[in-house]
Length: 153
Image (cartoon, rainbow, N blue to C red; front, side, top):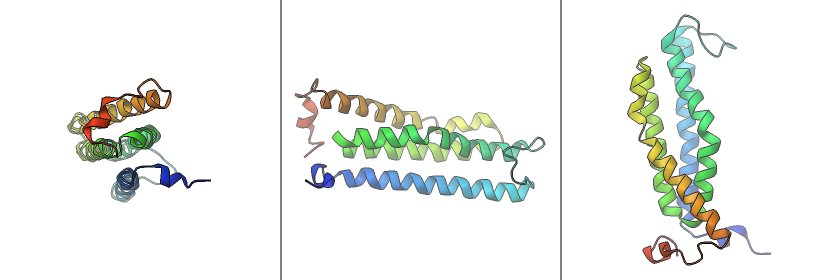
């Protein structure tokens, strides 16, 4: 039985690195929530505060990341099967957008979270790559011209 890793492009390592990077983004967001809990005196198990909008914005930025995390990881790893370098690039754009989104939200002006809306370029790119990967697996795009672009060995 062949090793599953031997069937993947060596460039899939980039996809794995971006996926691992997403864990560090999550850890940064968690740390910020813990610091905000201390600063604004919001005790566990309260998820949100009735009095402190600043804390709620920090918490909401993290919560929103977690809500989209399974979608991001799935799209990254599936799209990366066929297009590892492009998927990794879209993944980095998504994570950078998440950081910008969070920093904007941390200002306690929720409108400033829109600074990170470019994350959707990364997400929509990953969705597109996943759709193309699925169609290739189904045999509908066996002559995909992407092979000529040098994106997959």
